[in-house]
Length: 159
Image (cartoon, rainbow, N blue to C red):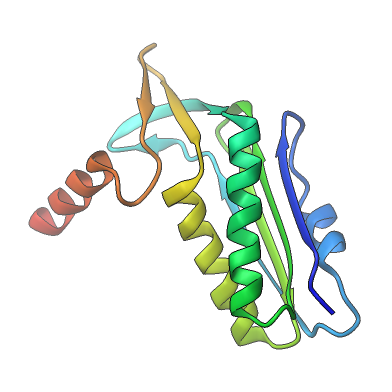
């Protein structure tokens, strides 16, 4: 039997318990989840909150396709929930939840990790950080962007 996929772009707070309920399956012994939250500092700047802008139809389609691809890689024995917040969140607010259930833990861990990495790389979701000094900046959120690459390079050069 093919696993279930749930994709959500939400303007209401995301709920980890609800995500776990959606992927629960009596045949699955493992549930793994990733929760992304707004942090209070980024690149040395104090952050007050983040606004997420989402091109919803394309985002939902992209997330659905990612889930179907991962489901295919695991032979269908997987349930997946991906929810992303749209709008403004304060520090500590939950921006993304990924929950995965599989018969065994190794698959659950690896699928959850693969999904968050693909989301960061492929999803049409943009992040605007709001800083304590009153400024704000659109930040590229995925691992392959120039902003992220430059920061990693600086970290390795100085750390």
